[in-house]
Length: 582
Image (cartoon, rainbow, N blue to C red; front, top):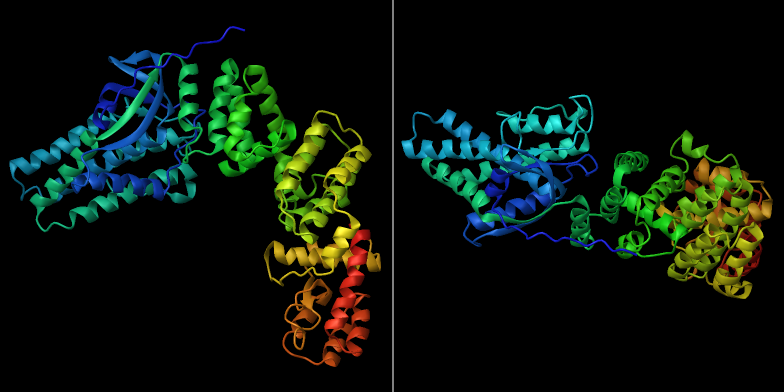
């Protein structure tokens, strides 16, 4: 097979001022939008102050990777930005801040300045104009995000660069990248002004502003790698960033796909945006989704190795189109798994109510390990009936292994991923085959479960997955005893009418208070009455008011006197029931 050769350009190390003087930069539409938060802008400012305060001679601002477009503009190269957009955008925002502060000082103090100080302010203004460029010839052209001027990021950025007064854009109409830009502008302007206020007279303030400008333009350096073809630029970007901290795995994967898509780049980019929209533009969720899909499609890999594994399989245009189509087809399901009751679309995604019940229970328990199995079954167009059978077994496996045995999740994460892989490759095709495989490889024995349940204890919490774990164990136990046909689940997980409570807390051994055998499920209004020390008779009268049939048994237990032995006896009964329930 013919191997293409990577052409590595000779890097240049320009100062920030030279960078914009000699180049025009264009950010393509497939790049992520401006995302720097206050932490990154604060780091930028701190690095600059180190130079201004004489603690360092210069600062390496990072790398810029570009593809040199064949076009040029007045003798300047037009560079398509592959990596470095955040640094370039922040640089011009900062230059507009310096220009505006210089203008404000000049207007407010025109009668008190010498020719020298006025000349310094004019030079700051000139250098800023030189770096930013006129309105019709910006040195940095951002990606166009919308046809409407109100919502287009490129238009907004240009308005911000032209701003000469206070920022007065309406925040309720801004997108997140727009807010990030305004926040960066305000943060930097506020810090420059605070720095200048440390000086009492106007001359010292102007000298300080001049020093800040010079430190940035002349002592901030970048390493710029400009390639002659786009492929080399993408490869260099991936190599430099695959271990970086500032980008998520999904950011790096996206750029790999854009390169591999070749002439289908726009179509792939559009589908990527639609996928991201479903996940609310959250790059971390997007990374988790891709990691989950990869576990179902190929194998389980930790997030740190996701890009390496994926880029070795998704190589050419056909691979990319297949990959992006799969993500597009599965992303809504992934959102349903994470938020099954978030909206009508999600709650009605599956018609089978029992299947939705299982998904909802998993969510309340904080379990995501089974996602690859669901993605694989959905991708293979399994019926909801089959999904329900498999998911029921996956839940039983989890409860035995994790909830009761308190064993680690690593075995389950890899085990569920292996199940998904075998479904995807059609090595396992029927629910019996899938469930038998889980039973053989992941299922804990009845003896193990009974022994572990005999001492099972869970701390009582008012919120979070620990609360829902106790609720789930009790709900299933009550459902098992009363054969309620899902009514207790409805009241517990959907209507939130039942809560767990201790049968008794006072005069009970401290080690036994949080044993499952000392818990009951009861209506919220009755649980409130049980708080605080009460006699067994008083507690029995409260339990007697419960609509749950099994709570009448607790009334009888309390009438005979509730103690440590009763807790141990009840827990053994629950342990025996557990091997039938799960």
